[in-house]
Length: 201
Image (cartoon, rainbow, N blue to C red; front, side, top):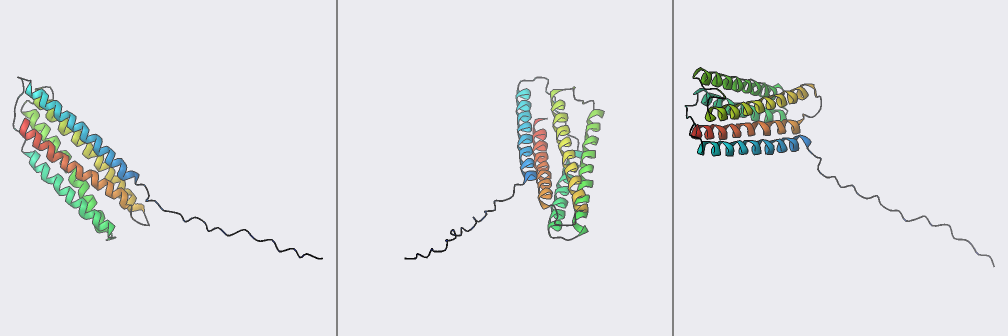
């Protein structure tokens, strides 16, 4: 009796697993958030030190803040507006109009830093230096640290502008958004510092 061998059966086809796409990490935004948290803690610690120093210091010397600080505040707030306007135009692919807003932000940022230097010179003309009194020391520390962070924000904006001018594909909106977030934080931080200095010194 002959037996016919059945043809070998092919193994069952297994459908490849479907890949799940997790959201891409945004290192620029994460780095800015970490930096904002660090800066906030630094200025919170300095504020606590100023309050403690003033409460136990008979040599605390009150003085009037230079009036140019209020002009500088308006300049910084205006720069935040021009940055946000430019960012939205870049996202909307409006062409050079968006870059114009970013360049205007850079100009206003430099004007703010120059105004802070003028404020320091005005205090120096009144005989108020870093080592004159605890109050003047805290003023110089607060404003100079903030000015350094503003310069860091300007460097970030220059980097984003460099990428925007060289890119031929989609605009680096993530980097631009991170730079804008940092810049807006500089605005909020300055308003806080100006309030503290007005009350305390």
